[in-house]
Image (cartoon, rainbow, N blue to C red):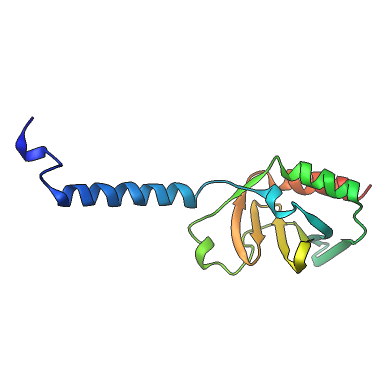
Length: 155
């Protein structure tokens, strides 16, 4: 083997290779899917608000419906539904303030209360955005998730 390319003789090459591998590992970890079900696991109470936004006859409207009486059966169904979804960080997640951007017609706000006074605040838009505890993420098929969740809690 050519002496010029041996890594054992060049600590700088070993250091550079280690830095590159660590950076790639950090990127893979940062962008890995996060399970949505972890946000509602061990919940004591779940509260939800469905907000429908739009324009009718040239006038904007905002219709909201509160779901404050979610039963234990419905909580279990919501957790089972959330098992099928995950959300991902974006480049902007680190610096976000939880604002949902883009053009959307429906938003569902969910407050999940857990043991020991901890809670999660989740906002899901039908445009693929999700805000979790004041950080913005991306989620696939958010409109389908919203419809399935509203079907569970409206029955």
